[in-house]
Image (tube, rainbow, N blue to C red; front, side, top):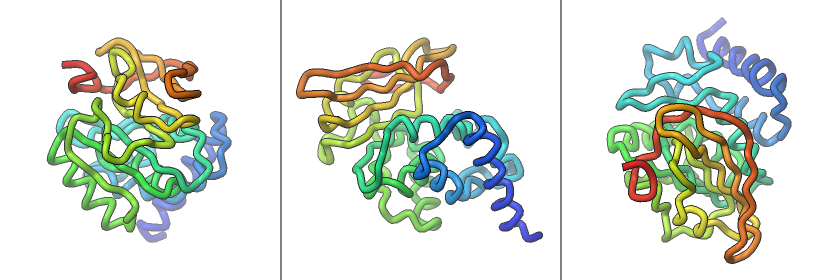
Length: 218
């Protein structure tokens, strides 16, 4: 078996045993997770662990999230295909690639320059030409491209940043971990119902690195 087909086989197993078995149902999310080569988004030394059921270090004190968590957060956005999405905390670019399989445009923000640069080049080399990566403060969003149909944040915030709530389109969803800086957070989905009306749902406990920035942790 070639290395490529071995990774493809592990990817298919990950979809079956880590995602479907835990209740991920969206065909679009399952297809995207089965399509993106996760091994390309982790350091070479970690490629053998790419489909493990957990997060992995990617450098600069950051991690690539557990596959199930990426799928859960993507499914919570309730994308139907063709949307414009804001991804906060690019990291390796893996979640942005998964989103790019479903959305028509993905705007991804990363505050660590080396990670932003590496993710951008990985996304290009993997053929994801509908993702733009920018280095900056993700807590302030990306106002030039608002409103977004979906916003997903891969870091834990002390509170929901107002800037992000107000860059959502009416009917759009913001998925973000909120809570303590150094222990578990609650994964929240904020839906914009009207200009100044929002609904909040709790998807359970998660653990993320802190969201740093003007409207996050200092």
